[in-house]
Length: 145
Image (cartoon, rainbow, N blue to C red; front, top):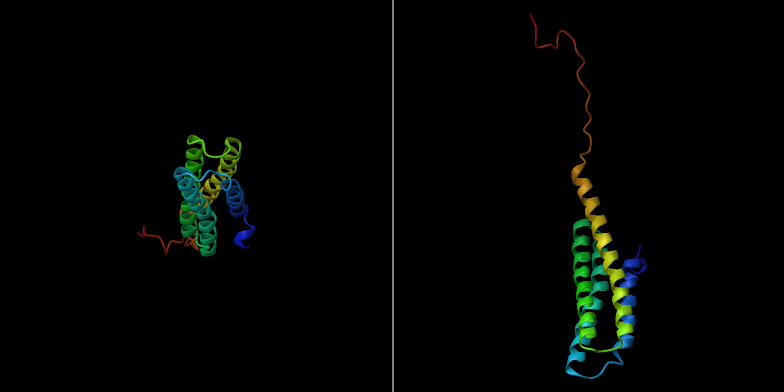
């Protein structure tokens, strides 16, 4: 499966598209410019890390990249709330973005937990070794008189 087909990849792209649209209407103040720069950087990092991790197809490495994407999604949440705190942009649009980003965060968390469980289950279960007990006979007995 191509990473672009993954819902976990498509959701942060929705955030970036909507974010790009609304940021164009923000004022040209120092605060808004800094928040815009940080928001766009962290929002695009989510999808980039999902794509890179998916290309690795190795359990622990994939978990690593999804964890980085989760950190970026948390950073997006921070900057969206900072924009709200500073009164930059429409509160309705920002709250909509926060909700959309929270869906991404939940999906990342669920994926990371699922991959960790799969990884841990492999460690917990051993492949059964072929075993055939030696049938009892007086010749095999250690208690010979």
